[in-house]
Length: 203
Image (cartoon, rainbow, N blue to C red; front, side, top):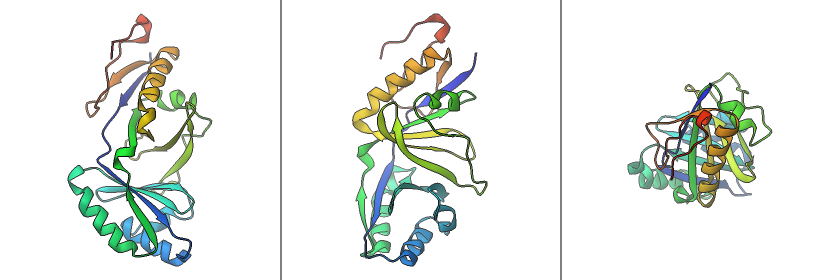
């Protein structure tokens, strides 16, 4: 039986960055270059995600980006630093509490996720950047990408949809007869028994 790991790690901090219409293309590139640790070439023009030191920069739509950090203690300083760098070129909003995050790994991850959306989840550009999709997953708006180097898929949904997505993943694991195991970094995730037993733990 294939195995899959499902985790719900917290979103430590997440900033929404949206360029103003008056910002020239060259200014946008320079700003992204600074925020992404000199890796704007990996972000533009592709819809990508890149790791930049302790934070990650994700495409979130035309002229919109998410800047996401791994340590909650850095949220306020990151907000001030990025706002100062943006000047009047972009608005910066703290959206940390608006997202729920799921990490899905294992050999069966792409097969499982393909049930929720019609995307080629294997695509990589070979430059250490991963394509990001603004899509609908299991019927709700979502941001989806594949992490490197661990190969896990990351899924962001609005916090109000988190329970729905958790239940959808439960049901999909049973349908595909996949044995789901809890990730050690998970929060709020209940380990499920093998689907072969047709049982679930109570939440």
